[in-house]
Amino acid sequence: MTPYPLIDEFLNYLRFERHFSPHTAKCYAADLAQFCAFLGGQMERAAAGQSFAVSGAAVASQAGGSSGASALGDVALELDPAVSQKLREVDSEQIKSFLSFLGGQNYSKSTVARKLATLRSFYKFCMKRGYVKGNPLSTIRTPKQDKRLPKYLEEHEVRKLLETPDVGSTLGCRDRAMLETMYSTGVRVSELVDLNLTDIDFVGEALHIRGKGKKERITPISPTALAWIKRYMELRRADPRAASFNQEATFVNKHGQRLSTRSVRRKLDKYLAICGLDPAISPHTLRHSFATHMLNRGADLRAVQELLGHQSLSTTQIYTHVTAARMKQAYDQAHPRA
Image (cartoon, rainbow, N blue to C red):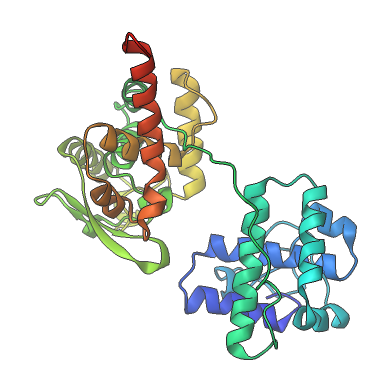
């Protein structure tokens, strides 16, 4: 829990009514902690972005009380009654001052926009619950964002990455199956590690995915990816310790427990180093690559939206900029009058 009951109530609202992920709730808590530090004049802490020591159900059932070590790994902000009152009395000028402060700390436009979105959500919640008389962000505009195209791999780079794991071992075969699944379906890494064996329809060649906000979808998966999952399961069942393994999870670590998103990232980093690809590539890059390659090969934008689990078509449309850029490049290179 945080030192501020109003923020605790908001975080619980995000987790249990809006079904936000624990990671997202932690990000909201960190942004609000920074804002509280700013309101309290704790500029050094605000500049460092130090966070609440949060625990409990509000952010993913972290153990310990509010006086314990921070689940975010930062120094706890102690209760300041003056700040607690200021939270309810914030006006647009204070919001503008906070944005100016963030700008002076050289935060990127996207980070400032995210922090502003946190405050918008918080004060919208406070308005609905009757905790504030007016919304201090009603006249505040979100800073215009620089257009950033998603990073993706070329098809030959994906093949190189997929063929890197040593499939002679159980763990190598698992890693090949994971990479094939991510590229075949475009699932988020969080969705990958949450995947249960019962979520795989081997006959219908589809996965049952539990996405953001507990939204569920069915997505096709390639026969190639399914074949690698089957091969991995055969090797896993042959392990003498198999009976003690997590029997629900599709992908488990060497101890038989469900893999974490961090473990998937570490495995990817390992294979990127081996095959000589850009070390900045992340698991999400495979999702971007999936969407880009689908559109490049003529897939319908609406279909890609459904496959990715995007709530809004505008979120998916960023990939059309990628494909358009590729077409323009091809035009410039090939047309005699370009």
